[in-house]
Amino acid sequence: MGFVFYDTETTGTSTSFDQILQFAAIHTDVDLNEIDRFEIRCRLMPHIVPSPGALCVTRISIEQITDPTLPSHYEMICAIRAKLAAWSPSIFTGWNTLSFDEHLLRQALYQSLHSPYLTNTAGNCRIDILKIAQAASVLMPGAIIVPTGENGKPTFRLDRLAPANGFAHANAHDALADVEATIHVARLIRDNAPALWADAIQFSDKAALAAFLDAEPCFVLTESYYNRPYQFALAKIGHDPGNAGSVLALSLTIDMDQLRAMTDEELAARLARSPKPVRRIRTNAAPALQPLTEYDHFDDVAAGDLLERAYRLQADTEFCARLIRLCAKQDWPSSEFVEEQIYSGFVNRADENRMAAFHQTAWEDRPAIVDGFDDGRLIVLGRRLIFEHRPDLLSDSLRSNMAAKIARRMTGTGYERTGWTTIADAQAEAVARLDKRNPEETAILSAFLQHFKIQ
Image (cartoon, rainbow, N blue to C red; front, side, top):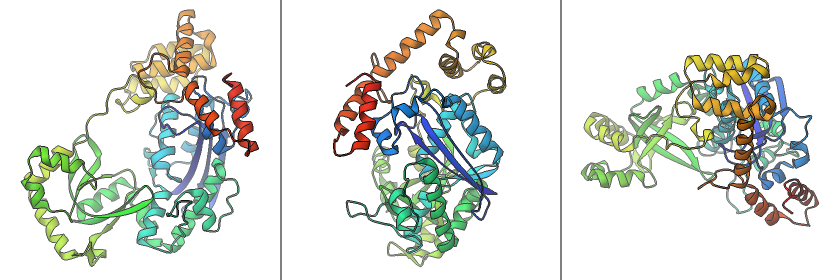
């Protein structure tokens, strides 16, 4: 199985409400040799106000993203889906993809009436080169050079780390250039930390990860928070009953007798306080795991003592059940916004067939398909697509209603909260960033303000 390295450039940092503007991907074989590459851009969706800061970072002007000759967002996503499906099955990866780009891609597929789970179904799986690089900095120091940022602390920003490791990254924040930089770092890790690379590939497979967690009474998890790596010696206590893809494991360096003596209220408060004694391990996110047998000691505790603690913990099924109950993931809060309803259930088989038919038929026939959806989310998203591409196919009242909703959304009028950038937000951000000492950025911001008539 080969790899698909991909990256996105977007209108902002919200994984629910911003959109992809540029997508780039390179398909490689198992040895990271390039097979094919793909790049595409699209124009701005009617209801999106981009972050001026995001445009400055990517050096994309408002004129570029409103160019009518560019594909629409829907057309771009259909092309992306077709290309990625042709490259499947593969291991999908990139730099910080599991925390950012993956969510943007899922949201884009969902909003375009495609299944959002392309990268982890049909034999596909995922890893994140950023997370592997962070683990390498602890487990295999010297495998890669970790530069320091302006604050004097280690930084894993790709535009800093790739050049520090020999990649000429002159075009940082261009999606295709970032993909090339990520492949360069991946090759270094593969060559300089082969065992870590092999583990990452192994644990990209959910079945292999589940087998490891079942076979190992205790293990070490390496995770990073704010660019600082942490390690935890853990023992599995069970699955989160609210999320089958989440394994719960307790730290073996904590005083378990103290936890046992707590009331439920006290224990719940302790479990919520950092560092959290119970760690969630996502089985579809290729976590960095090692068997405890690779360590003589951990936090000044002998590995044999930790193993004994693990056996005693797992034998105490009542305590494990109590921990699981208090740690169980709560249901997603309901939201009025269709974007935040992406995980509010799977669509039924009939609607899956209607989604497929939507993409295969002419625009003139699509309103009837949208009206026939059982799932209300799909009706909202389908009408949004029709309004953008063929508003003449909607009734006068529906077209007028949707235009009014877009206007309110862009201004934020009538909403108790907005998770997206409004025109007022953009105005404040653009004015704050204006700096005559940076002509390129000033030109981008001035054109942005002129476009939205908010000078």
